[in-house]
Length: 375
Image 1 (tube, one colour):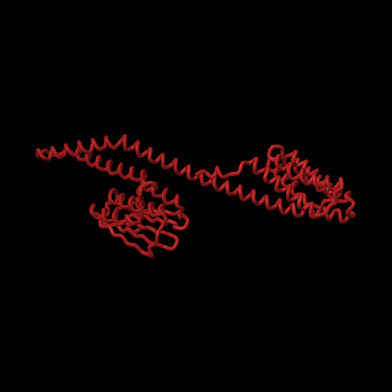
Image 2 (cartoon, rainbow, N blue to C red):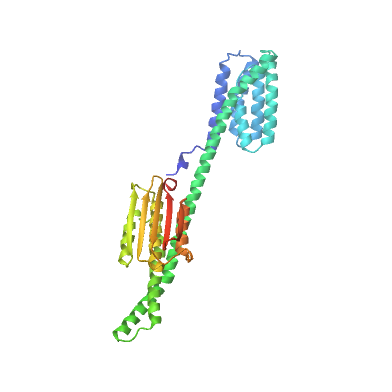
């Protein structure tokens, strides 16, 4: 249900404020027990007009500023020691409308004339008149400070809401684009790669069945088809791995290690620290780091063993994957797309990634993912 249905219309809200201020001014004026003379009646009229004029503050802020200022001076001259509340509301409305110079000029004029008006009432001498004028404004300044604070709070609230809306919109667009790319890849490449793979497998099978030697080129085509198929499946899985589907996380790392072991790699998993829940994004990134690392080891490292180490720290999840492959500090491999994607995922969460050959031989991937910041 839309919250807008419960909002008060701007015009109605202006009238409610105007009536409220006018009522407050009249009640304050009546508490002074003024005589029902012509001057006293004029004072009550000015109190009412000054308050009700605020209803037009949104349409004519400068005119309302002038009217409320004259009314404040008028009822002070009539002997009504009432705070210039309506004038302060008018100052706020005029400043909000952008009439800064006019507002400052009128405010200075009213501040200068109010003591003279109090002196003209004949109820005070010069010192008392200035003190009375100052007292009439003190309560108004408090109200103005409260109004300014409320306006600032609402502005900050609107800014926060706008920021959340922008982030949600950007995230939704990124998800839509990612799924669009996944569909395009699936539609344009999956069928062709499947045809290449099936045809090469069939050609190898027929050649062997006939006892004929299998050409090396045909074996290379078959292997390339298998590799391309695996790469495409992994890419589509990564592109489709969003919040709308159950994401892979730390609970699935064991399956990755077991799968690597079935492919001929001696892989081990070690978990340290007190296990605790981590944000979904952290778990998903940890899974991707381990998955890409083990995939690279199986394809490029020519390694016999690999170790996966996960350390649950109070505010950090540390991951380390080592292998005993052919990488050395003197022959560092060029970073591929998989490693760049890993680094982007870790950096997006405010973490750090280090991937480099080990001094004793082999390759190491180390990632630290902040848990509190990502949550």
